[in-house]
Length: 289
Ligand SMILES: Nc1ncnc2c1ncn2[C@@H]1O[C@H](COP(=O)(O)OP(=O)(O)O)[C@@H](O)[C@H]1O
Ligand SMILES: [Mg+2]
Image (tube, protein in one colour):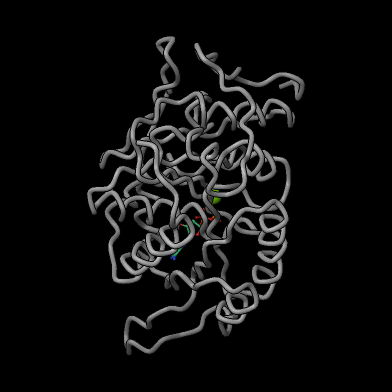
């Protein structure tokens, strides 16, 4: 496949979004661009494989369980995971009035590059400018409907896509996922520093695979070493939103495409802390609904 052309061209929409200017956080301009979406929050990390997509899907499904309207924009173009975790297939449709997102069993609208390829094994091999266009379309060209939260599942790292998201989507802030390993703790700082430089509020940290509860004796095992999340949170002056354990049901349900069936005290705590943190960060703003 040529690297010049996309395997599947982005579907045209009747009203392609223009470049979205970022106002200062909380400005009227920024609120209005969001239309009927109350909050847009990116979920990112420095490294891949730490559980960004898992945390995004768990958070979205928990908020949905509480009756809130939540959408997921899967911005991980080369490693899209949300459709697999929630057992969803495409394609996305467009009847000339914008892209209709796919909708999960529990009512979560999702857009993902996964819905634009023929099967799970086909990669999307696109150059930067096309990826940038796709991300912009995935926000402004989609009929999201009224949403309380739009979560953006970010690709790892500090490359093109995060830059595009920060510069073209009016996000309220970003949640960072890490694991207790040194490397993940080290690299998450790069992602956090990038967000900070681009004036994106840091909403908090989620430590995933934080510990394991021994199934026999119930003792807590620090599988990946002692947590550094409190230290990093203090360094940046942001809250720890949750510490999620390594849980075999999470990987089992993910493989089965039924992660939306997973519940637990830690996931509930994550949703509580998330809502608090977003409210705090956007206090005083008037939502345009
Ligand atoms: N808390 C957890 N317990 C068990 N397995 C997990 C947990 N978090 C993530 N996983 C598994 O680890 C893998 C990577 O997670 P994923 O969310 O895809 O990471 P990322 O989006 O950061 O690349 C997946 O196979 C997922 O099922
Ligand atoms: Mg992922």
